[in-house]
Length: 310
Image (cartoon, rainbow, N blue to C red; front, side, top):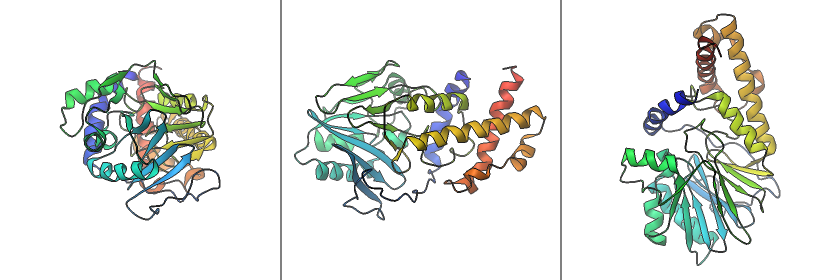
């Protein structure tokens, strides 16, 4: 199924730029000790808040990202867009006065997350390194988008450690289910993970899961669970704990199980879409809009495996 994912990666990336992600903010309360209330307020187009020691989340509309103050300067993840980056700069400077930007990190090449580095470099220095997976570099080079500078340092599947006395950051590659370029951040001192797109906070998968190898997606989520973390922050949705990832794994496993049963019963895709209901997840974000599409994507995925005799 890996070739299927890689083949669809470019199409998915182009499509995602045409259709704005309709992921609404989750109604998660500020639980004590998890993260501090934003000075910007959660009702505006942007906000930032402290999620752990020296570690902050920045939100712009429906996208979230992370920045971390290390001894050598701030490491800023996904600048999101040029518009978002203008506010991201202000958030970084407010949270970490007299800041020096150590590096910009792209979690993957999709431009709804990787655009905006030009703004950060304009404000913090044109020589600030940009770190990304080697496949992020290859794809962005092919895309040739003037708004997205290429990584100046690439990471292989073996990952990379950004060494620091107080706040080391491990960049890890956990799989290819959401592009073959996805990096997550693991902060061992804070016991925190930053993961984008392949896991979200109690939300359906995006539409009909275009090009996604769902088996690999579940494996990636299980690999996250193997890390020693207490808090996870996302590219979409507010921070949560380990139980959020457990729920995501359970959802996709249930979705695949139902799709597999439908295929074995020789139901058509339309029949599967009408008959499969997972009531347990009806309160999740975008259930009404995307659950049936998720079923269709899972059905096609299982049908393809069945046709190949897997």
